[in-house]
Amino acid sequence: MAAMARESLSAKLLRLDNPIASLTLSFWLWKALLFIAVAACPGPGYDTSTSLIPREGASPFASIHDSLPLPLKFARWDAIYFLHIAEEGYVFEQEWAFSYPRILGFFVSGIRWSGGLGGPANTALVGMVLSHVAHYLSVLALYRLSANIFGHATPTQKLICVLSAALHIISPAGAFLSAPYGEPIFSFLNISGYYLYTSSLIAEHNRAVFLRDLRVLTAAVFFAIASVVRSNGILSGFLFAYDAAMLAWATLTQGPSSYNARRLAVLVVGGCITAMGMVVPQILAYRIYCTGEGHLRPWCSWPLPSIYSWVQSYYWNVGFLRYWTVSNIPLFLLAAPMLVILCKSSLWALKAPSTLCSESGGQSSSPVSPGSMLFRLAVPQGLLAVMALTSYHVQILNRISSGYPIWYWWLVSTAMSSFQDPHKSRRGLSVAAQAMVAYALIQGVLFGSFLPPA
Image (cartoon, rainbow, N blue to C red):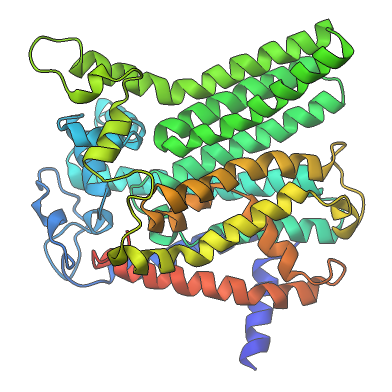
């Protein structure tokens, strides 16, 4: 009976005749549940760092358990830095590890300029609203991106798109996609950039040159802002590098043409725009720390000065194999499922099976080979997995993976033993979905209690 009830609820939430409405309802139900899980945690949490944040301008919506304003219950771990930077700017050198507060500060400044209230609690509230909106838009962007690749003409194709977007709703990133963190904004920007990029390939196939170039450059802007939010956004620049390399090879083997020259120029400009998301913050830091009189910081004399690399290494102990210690084994075990999923899904997409289109229930509505697009998108995700394993604080993989679409598609494809049997697919996918829900809720309680993992 319980299984039948779950199946009935699932059928109501994932109606293929109105996928956007279904995803919207599922999204806000999930967000409400996650909000309750975090907000209901008693007290300021195991770590009382949040209670040290000044209370000026605090939100009137206070927790019933203590005097901590409710929005500040979502200010955990790095969010404490985010709120301080958004409020005061970059005061301490180690704060330059984070660029997301620039985005948050932009919105906070706009609200203050229009007469809104200030203070950390209200800044946290702005960040929460921004995260919810960005995550919702990210879900819709993933649906459209999936449609670009797999098509959406048949019920089975729509099912693939809906299930992939639904998995993004219950991503293991959990509370980090509701709190004032950069992950939901990065996810929206990166996935939207992928959507624009794949749309440019479709325009290229149709010889719509102006539309192609516009989409490439717009995608580059999205990737650049994504790189400001999270440095791993720079990995998406591979898309432009790959296409530029293919065009350069074609020019060498087939001779130059004005058509290829124009496309190559647009790709180079797009790559430069993407790189600016990393370069501009470094220039700003260099002007502050390395051009004045007095003692200069050690990184100023590097061949390629980078405050980001310095701060990550000096203050956060980020570096090649630095995290490989016995004490961190539990964190590697925690990240292991996602690490395996990212690696296997990247390999799946790199193989780009030629039968993918027929297996997905008919001819794709896209004129570009799904395998060709999957191959391109697989590389940034694969690089992320390798870098997380070797150089990052590996447990953050569970949240930063939310902005990469390949693994959602792989879970859907592997769980669907037959693309032709939608009912069987839902049952097959339920195990993965239940595991993600359980992890996200447990993580939400730990997050609200200021307990690891972060």
